[in-house]
Image (cartoon, rainbow, N blue to C red; front, side):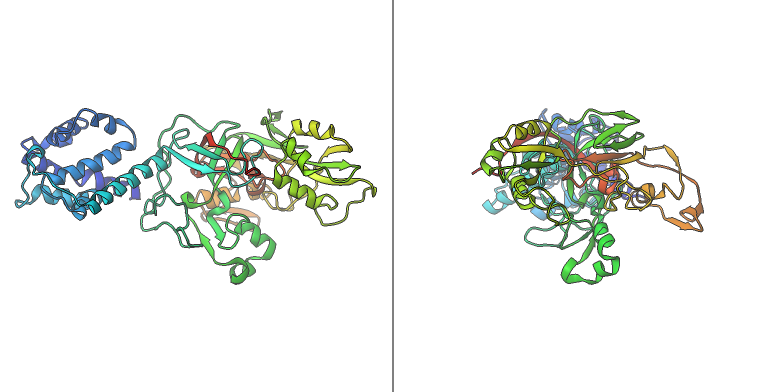
Amino acid sequence: MTTAIILFILYVLAPLPGLWKIFEKAGRKGWEILIPVYNLYVWLKILNKRWFWWIYLALPFINIFAVMLLEVDTVKAFKKYKLGEQAMAVLLPFYYLNYMGFSDKEIYTNPKDLPKYKKTKTREWTDAIIFAVVAASIIRIFYVEAYTIPSSSMEKSLLVGDFLFVSKLAYGPKAPNTPLSFPFVHHTLPMTTSTPSYLEWIKCGYYRFPGFGKVQRNDAVVFNYPEGDTVSTVFQSNLSYYALVRQFGREEVWSNKTKFGDIIVRPVDKQENFIKRCIGLPGETLEIISQQVYINGKPIENPKNYQFNYDVISEYGLLSDKLLRKIGISQEDIDNYNKNRMYDEYGQIRNYPRQDTIGIIPLTHENVEKIRQLPGVKSVTVRVEPKGESNLDIFPHDAKYTWNVDNFGPIYIPKKGASIKLTMLNLPLYHRAIETYENNKVEVRNNTIYINGKATDSYTFKMDYYFMMGDNRHNSADSRFWGFVPEDHVVGKASFVWLSLDKDES
């Protein structure tokens, strides 16, 4: 029996016998509680609630909060005014409402006839804070949540420090995997470095409520970082656990606490939030050829403000910071330009004539033309990793695939219900999806693939997957590095920026 079914029984079905008896104590027929919608009409009438309560009960997810308030007002009719008593009605309705209904000691009083109960200032503040926290938590979980952009991977479309609202309703809100958690924080308690903000006493599986639509190409999507299921407390999601293992070895990562800290595991909804642009949809075949993305063999339209790294060669030394800021280059990119102007990515001095100075700057097409017009600029050349030049930091981190950030694929993006032929060649592409995201055990014995102990040469996917990329193409850790984003990791759609502050200005 799943957690969701248990919660449904405890919080929806189990209180019904008690409410039957409470209806009778209030002078109504007990069976009225069993008729959907009509039971709410009777309940509101018993508690003397006004017509606008129907609006609260009609709004998805807000109606959960409205029912909690009805439970509180119900026990008030039995003169239960203490905070603990009212908390019992909300947290343990399967026990407390049944007790109110079946106990001969508990007498129902029409709310009109109840004596006025005067709260202390402390109690008023406590009730107000609880009301605000619960209401805000419901809005945050199911409707909309505020985020800030933490990195430059989406520049120039979204800037570091931008404040934006993310719609949970766009694709349908997810039910929390870990409902017992500290409000308004993500995975770590405030003023701590590694104390979890959640309890795993209750775990819920993946369920997504209906939304306004599905993920579309070029949507800016917020999602839980797919490789954030396991993290080093030192590096967190800045450098994934799996990248650390590839670089240093598993034994070193787990044993060297000074360098890596503890290795911890997080549930899906507590993995770090990332924002990228959806480039590939379920069931499509994606390929990147010389920086151009192709879907099913056809080039797609690129985002308006996407950018790549360019080598800028100037004959009068460095371009001035003031000049670069004037055309819209961020201070972070200017600092990197100043730092790497004479060196390549391996730290070696570049072999250019002494009078020339070279630097690397991320540029949009518009800024490329502006840079070319600056005095002393000799050339502005996009940096491209050649086709066939392997980069083992690139997914699937296998020597058989000579892919890099500029030449990648072709790769089929899994679709729910679609079956693929599994071979030893393509297994690295889908191993993590099959085992980690869809909870199967994958083994290879004598060049034969086993899933859950059974030899197989095919697999049918249980979820949709997406391919995400940052608009700052050479400065983005995205699906080219860690693969597909499963649908159960999708949080919502970046709807609009409500505050944008230039981090380089006062």
